[in-house]
Length: 145
Ligand SMILES: [Zn+2]
Image (cartoon, rainbow, N blue to C red; front, top):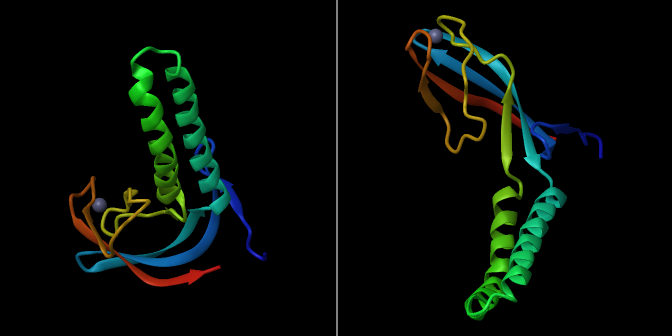
């Protein structure tokens, strides 16, 4: 319970800080190091979103009950797909990580870089939007808290 640090990134998204990363951004022969913070959705927040998705499917089901003919197909379909939809929403948000990198700059022109906040594979390769130099971002170290 030492590092329970919550932050609000977007409206309604409560993320818990789960770790830190040291990242090296290199382009041509220059490189710089930056620290990144890793945030993740809590289990409770993922469950809340899944619950809301299930409630939405139930509300749609209730709306479809009085509609002739539609209710023959919509009600059983929503009964079956509502829990599956909720499970999918939970899987999407459960432990989803987001990176927050402080002062990510291009090593050659010092322009601010927009690095991916949910990178799927490292190292990242991209081009600076100002000087068009291709750069690479790699993980030097990662610590969990
Ligand atoms: Zn640049």
